[in-house]
Length: 243
Image (cartoon, rainbow, N blue to C red; front, top):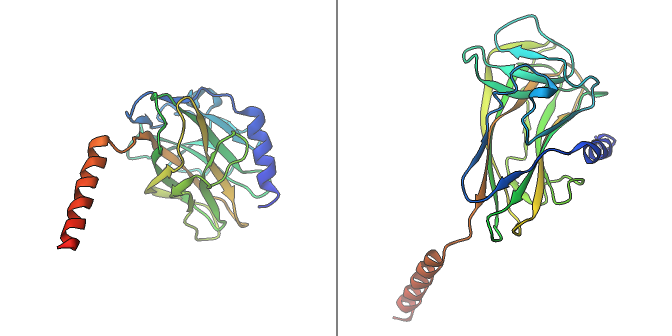
């Protein structure tokens, strides 16, 4: 793992050129990845940049739950829940030697004032099981190069469910709702970078897993009225203690 991180960092620094998600107010930005319905590079959402160590990273790969044959190739996948044929997940399959990948996006604060942070929600979805361990990481950066969890809290790492010595596609995907937040102030006009990382952890067969239903919301400053209310409560508490 120590050898993988620098390669990942250099590759993204060279290739990250997507348009930023611009937060002009406190309305929630949503990406459901349903447009990524054929597993090709052309269908990657406009605000995102995808990098996979495998070449080619995209092969029009689609994996649908409950169906066969099983696709063992590494790279990015359009993962589809067979019960909801129009619902697609941005996913990948990893490999220790040539199978890690990232999905990166920038967020710009254009609300007109400094905000205390950004709130994120997303769904982790796993479509197959395998003997090898992989993680979906959520990481942040202030310079678009060095990604870590220094300014993040919440669900920053999700480990896949493993089991069995051979690949098996689930009849229905495992779905887990996740939340995270950027907890450091962001000045008006400033941009921060976030990314999802598909990382192999141990050997063996690799599962298909991905991210879906991402939301991005600027966190507002506490209102003056709320601060005033806290002040009144604090004064009342002091008076009760004095009596």
